[in-house]
Image 1 (cartoon, helix red, strand yellow):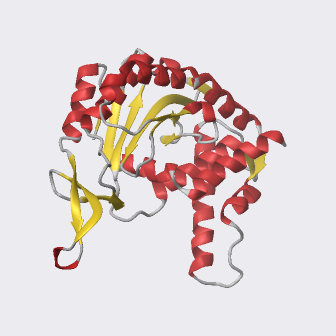
Image 2 (tube, rainbow, N blue to C red):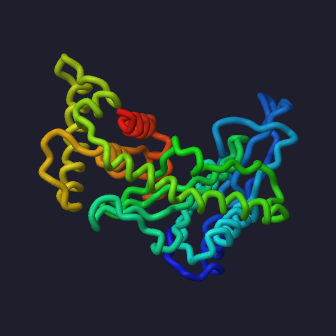
Length: 296
């Protein structure tokens, strides 16, 4: 669910409505109802199982109220209206969009980035993660740079987060302060030139020498990525594509292809696609390759 609002209370109500269920822990049985030391997590609204494995007897699943505490802390730290987008995929995911006043122009006036705060509250036993990413208006990409350490904070996975509001606000304040760092990295990516063919080979390898499905998939993917880059270059007023591009363009072409164009099982919604793309191996490799070009 997604909503644009300048009303903090409405933003929180959207999240309450979207996550209007509890996550309960129940014992798992073996054959003939044999007792086991394992427990499973299940949604209270549809009893669907959560996660890919069991949890221990002492595991305490977080609830919607804990997610709301994270969101309230982020809103307080950024101290501005927030648009909110949220979804559930083996955990709670929230995307918060601070005011557009913090826009940074990367190339001329048609290639801009805007801050986005991503909150991940999964049920995999790991810490809650809050990351500062960006929205690029030239291609509608929602992304984050995982290599920029200042843009990520880990929050202890525990229930009762509302009692830790002051600490949470301080952590989100660190994310707000890292916006200039993230924008600076992006600007350096824009100033670095890469050979697009070499860039894509680093990520996806060479196409198979034998005609077949693998070679066809490789060629179609390469064509789609380059077409996306050419269109975005035209849209942002760049020179005609001749085989080279900025590391920023190359990264976004791969990230945009993965987020918007690659096939996914189950017809995921837009927000789920953002999460899937952020965890995609090709996107991570594209980021590493783009950042490696900065030292060349």
